[in-house]
Image (tube, rainbow, N blue to C red; front, side, top):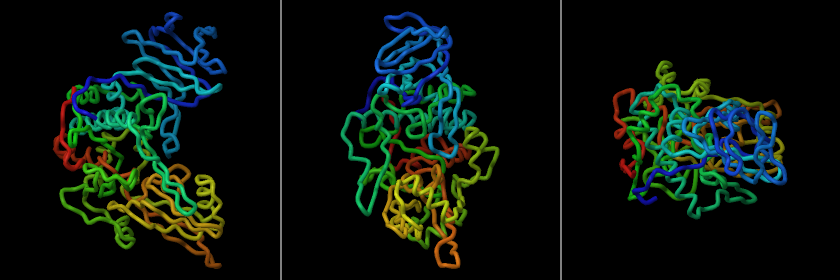
Length: 441
């Protein structure tokens, strides 16, 4: 993206492909051609588009898309918004939002719920939703800058062609998930893009202060805004971009040690087995419960073992998980063999072998999805097996490191750095090699 722009107004998909929506308009909202609406509402869709009902259950608008423009100070509540979709913390919440509400028909039966809002207002919610507003101020500034950068880079990518996100084959399936694939809104509100949970999670002025103090600032490389990826905890070493996404190295998204001292890459199976059982002295290796309570939202604190973790399945359990996730019947599961790892130990290609067939899968996220009812914390794991008397595997044990894809900024590591006194500039320089900070509006 070229540098120097004006603050954009963006569209955020709060929820998509919904059978209906219910909520409340807190204040007045203008519907063009209809007039003002406030109070409880609900909406459904039919062959003619959106049907919007007021609190008296009267149809007040009917169109393929209905835009409710907020008067100053008005907000709207949406009931039962699903957050953490398909992750282990998935749940429903009532959420309140600023800005305009757009309801768009998806076919004849479903609705997309979209929030139209200025970028800087959006960021206050993102910072409060991704991490706690009680986190160290320098860390909140860091997150403001990277979330702004990521969003602006994503908007630019939506306007350019990109490689397909899948390379299918009979013996190899390599798949990754682009964050700019949404068609009728700019970004979604969940972990697929950036967490955006409205004003519900804004518990203090700290996030707004961080956004205001960094207004218009991004990280840039070579005259363009950086695609600033981030995740929860690297486990000690961050990952290269191409381990998780396209085979196109990005200079500022390269593997680094999450410490002052360089650590060797974890690329062999022998090194991986040592790595996942080690406890290196790195920033994201913290057992400080008080600090984690300052950093993490409540539902993230339910994940207590993220730096090093262990998951076990019986063979039959794992066979069923893989069958459900892949749609493939492998028969009796015989082996899971890493074929390629990135520098953090995250597996890029994994061979799944069964009595009926074998296939190589990738990339990082697809591996995590195939091997868990939700997602494994990361693909930086080693597998050990227990065997039954007949010689077949009876149990699969995963020992792993880190939480998330590992590319870019380690959120917990960065927060610990801020707590130790590092500045936002120093933290960004640590995680994004060669990038600098620039004000673009």
